[in-house]
Length: 236
Image (cartoon, rainbow, N blue to C red; front, side):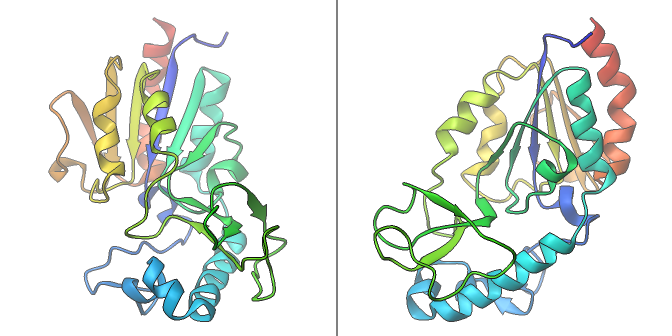
């Protein structure tokens, strides 16, 4: 029997770390040996769209080669027990490939592209394979860019994320340092959630409200550790 309770999962880079997807918040300020300012801002695209396209092509290729980890798979399995809605800050599609059916990408999905013109959010284009080419254009003739929210850009899915969090009976924050805003502020909008968990290797030091249960560990280990309690809560 499927519970009527709603589980909302808010995932970050740590959810995909076990799949070999590198995070960008390393101590040296570099992402795959590139300065973020050179590959992950609107100014970077304006200055050198070819470099940005090559950079994301390589990221896309690695993501396609990666496999969902046990944490992704366990979250998908929760759909057998309750309604599960995933809000992810990640640009990979590993949640979907693990079997999660309701996933909102706050920062875009690297498997898609969009127009570099003024109507960027009108339509998204699925990329066939890993390579986005210079010649790929939107219906209005503008060059296609990665469907990724860059630093300094608005987050189009933010309002939808707020609505989803308002439905949560159970909130699981997974693998995020809660450093990227405005996304990090979303956890405060799960106002009716009676059970809240934060799963992260640094869970004990992260800045979350006192009603969060802190679970130290990676995605796979952390989800495995809270499963027994989740099953009890869902059966109430």
